[in-house]
Length: 425
Image (tube, rainbow, N blue to C red; front, side, top):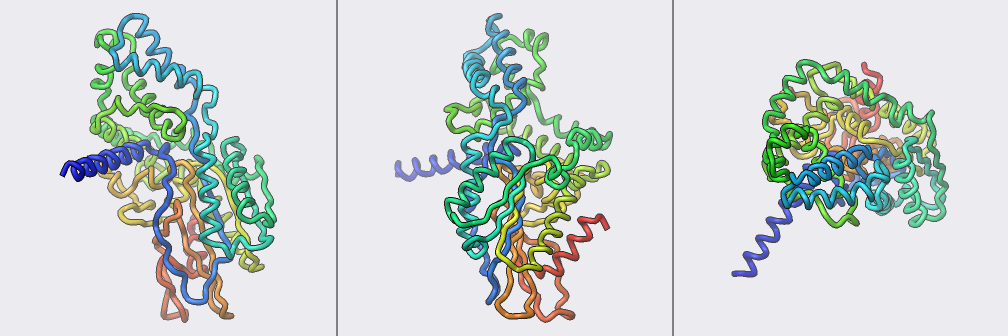
């Protein structure tokens, strides 16, 4: 009986820890997929993979956030205003100020491993695409962490298939589809009075007081010297980033209650939706950050289909493109509906979850199939984070001889549906 209780306790703690990691929002470290794939229709084999991936886990940025956390706590400590928990946090902040701040924004070793794992599974899942000297082209954002992510991915491809013909580059001219817009402008456009009203509702559930009382021993000192809301957010962001650096042997988990963390994540999730989702509060400028990428996917696929040769196109960029790209694709997987339009922010997390859309190393793959029978249509399926997705693409069985079952779709239907979205028709 004791063994059973111990096992149940271990399972409960494990599940609890997993939930907390997911509430890290876009800092959630890429989970290794376990889903099985639907068998392709008889006679069909993959011949082309078109991919866009976010860089892997990185250190939090900017460095000023680490400095602010350490300096705030050090000043309070010199005034004798820290509790024992506050002093413990100070030691952790000191380490991060020395170790992580100089690496702010850089890819971590876990980030490298994430892309190596995705590459290895891609070859395993679609070996026909990577046979012999198949042509692989890879493009990366000018961000160093994206270039290093691409390097890690291609390193694993070469290890798996040494004969591959690989072309890789990174340059400013590629940004017109990898990450075309100024994210700061997108944020400003989304910050409408209607959104501010919804945001205030969410933040009414976010109260930093309990945490401040746990860190500092003098509430009057906090009121006079500390921006509690800002410090609360910095602890949230920096603490969440630690899951991407397992070599750092501590977390900020002891600072949070379930209620505090859940409330803060709900607000964070809604913020991402307001900026890069199909939100009804503004002109949805964030979606424009992915429309050129969708057009690139479609246009490059047309060229590859014309030749029919095995190949892959790999692109490495950012969450600010993965988010709206997922929205444009209107994918569904379980209760997650990436293209949903809703004004109900308090219940948004039930249908739209940032950590499922763009964890670190998030990726979308279009996998193309052709039949051994002449005249059969080209098929395509979409994987998001290596999980098959259901799409709103329809097939008219009265006009074509074959309509496949999801997650497979006729390329002609797929191309027509998403071509209109890419061109905003």
